[in-house]
Image (tube, rainbow, N blue to C red; front, side, top):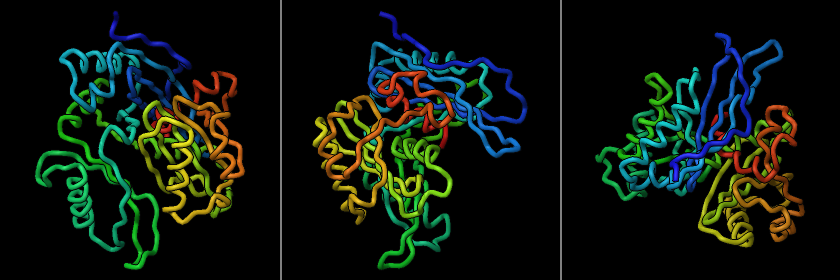
Amino acid sequence: MSDLHEYAVFTEEWDQPAGPRSQVAIELIGTRLRYAEVEHADTDDGPTETLRRLGTCDFDFEVDRAVFGRPEPHQLDAIATAVRDLFEGTTADALHVALHPTHCVGFFTPVPDGLDPETRFGRLRREAALLADAEPDRPGRVRAVPVRTQTLDAGPQTWHHVIHVPEAVHARLKLLAQQLGRQTRYELADTTQAAASLVAALTPLGAHPDAFQLGLGIYPAHVEVVVCQAGQWYAGHHAPARTPEDGAYFAYRLMTDLGLAPAAFEQWWLYGEQTDLRAHNLLASLLKLEPQRLNPLRAFGLPAQSGSPTQMAAYVPCVGAALV
């Protein structure tokens, strides 16, 4: 059996002028590598995004394990070759990787405002090492992104989302990024952040600042919960789950932890690989809202009929990572 089977959902040939810039992204889950390329441009009417590539590669091994776990000798080479072929001719200077929360240690944590950058990052690195069960001085990469501010008992704090990347995983991701044909880097986007970037693209300007949206990513062995405020990433969570009732439980638990009532939510979306709308009656009853599938095509003004709704919902992390 061949290592790779590739099929494109959306491809557009174009001569790229000097002005626009491209962002490419991949998602690795199970035996599938999903990929996307988005062109960003500034026009007289404001910034625009155009979807240039979208598709999937199927392998005969688990690609996420090959990158984030323990690969067999030939597997990483097969993935690298696919990345090089899929993005041939791109001008992107970074490979964005949609990172499921199950792949690396990630967490949200508040940091007091006013700390100098070195002190703040040192604090985040130590916390990441502790949660990853790694020595603070061992090689490893930490990526921290400020998400929102909040005044707590200890004063103003900024919540950060932190990802700990072991050195071996860093080396593999760096190798994949270098397949773009130049000294490119990689960027990580947590899949709840990626989903939030699509929610933001679909949220109309002037949305009420107190309006919340909920996203539920459904996968065979885990669920992802993302909360947005006026379309902006607010919080995320993941947990092992195998039933829609599990998803409803963890969504409600995150709402409770954030001090949000179900009535605070005006929309909720499904994405991922198991998005049967009829299966989520429990959460729909709790929110008093019917779910919608999150369709990345809508963010680019493309007809939703260009792809099946269930198929498009699976591309949310990949396309969202290209928008982060």
